[in-house]
Length: 158
Length: 331
Image (tube, rainbow over all chains, first blue to last red; front, side):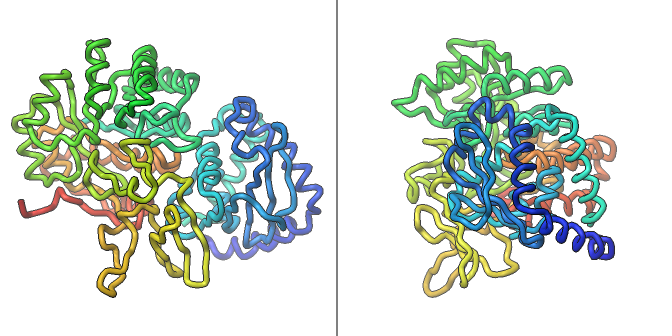
């Protein structure tokens, strides 16, 4: 880890994330997630989230969302209500996870990620995330993922 | 020795192929394989893509149909065999004698590997499977010591494959019903050890608690590594003493034994982990490819590199590795 860079970057990311109004986050996620998971929604792989809530909490940034599917449409809500399953961890862990630099089980064994609630739903979402074909993502999203990957490699390099 | 690598999804398969697998093994999306977890494994379309990707790069594909067919579901096991044959896979990994017989009668040209779940531990057992079902390879259970592996290999009528790396269970492969004892489902019957629907994790004041069908399996203190919530890896109170009464969460790592396994005539090394992510598959396959290639050059002077062992320990359950029964000096 590069503590110096982390010291400068994290507060900036944290403040911008918290300063971004929830409505903007909601609109952005509801636009992005259906694109990322287009094939999975189409094939019914994500039916497990129909009417059920997955809560994602990024602890160090103090932000989070409750995500559900309603008639195959993604809905994002505030993370203050109940959820069927809750996955929580720091921003670093989520960055390493989505950019496929770390294995979620490893993070879980090392207590860097927490899963509470319906374990089967959490596992299914994890497996769908693992099976996601990054090659097929729309170009801007592929770029975004590549940036997350590079930035996290840069900040969190061990 | 052939490097046989796990693939629970298409991205995992691609990364295994790209990182140096000689063969990959996968399962279909039902209880015909021993990693039957929600969201994992291959539907017809993904299986086709997987086959195309691997074959183009001259990597073999094995399909695990390695659970025991249940009376009500026999058709499902037959269909899995038919589907694998139609896909044109290189071999099936099978445990159940009914499935073995169905396959060798209907598709005599399709290579059969006896799954580790078949639990064949000596050359007489291997001979039986060879004579009756024409198996071409068997995966040896991890209960065997290196001396026993050598003994089985000396007289085996078929090629042998052994486990090289991965989460270790209680080493009664094909015969373990501990999961069934608590949840009514086990790998042999339903394709899942400690099915996720029976698992609950909870952060409490006493620590992180894992429960299996409401039975407390373990409680981890701050800073303690967690393991899979299986009955065999739990900590229990025995005579007022709380400890891993059956076994500790750990991973098998036999990189050090490569020269001996090769000398014994072992034809393939299997890496465990179809339930793990592409990131894990990439890390372990890359290390093992490098280790086997290094051995091919150095032969007698082969010594495992520290960075290989570090990198494998990092992704291990319990972050510790062991030689398991291979190192058992007693018989």
